[in-house]
Image (cartoon, rainbow, N blue to C red):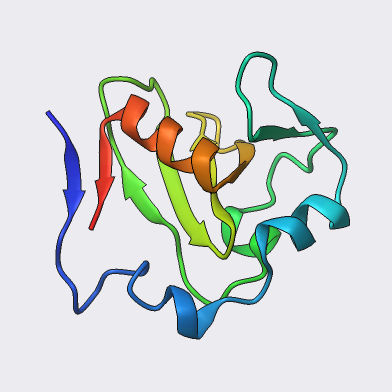
Length: 118
C-alpha cells in the first residue's frame, strides 16, 4: 500500500518552485553530514540538535508532509527541495532524525518507504 498526497490545493510539493529557501547543496554545505553507507546520495546529519524541526533545518516557510507507513516505525516527514529532499523521522520522544537526499536518493528512499508524491 502506498501513501499518496493528491490534493493539489494543499500539496506542499506543488509550491516547491515558489517557496524554496535552501537547496540540498546549500543545506549540505551549511551543516555537517555523513554519507549513509550503501545508500548513494543519502546523508545523515552529524551531531544534530535533536529538537530542530525539518522546517527549521531547511529554512522553508511550509510544514513537511507527514506520513505513517508500515516501512518505518516513526512518523516520516518529507520536504521536497531543489536538488532532492529532506526525509526526517520524528521519534516517539519528539526528537528528529534527519536525512538529506539528492534527487536519486530521495526518489529511491521514498519508493522504499511506499510514499508516492504526485
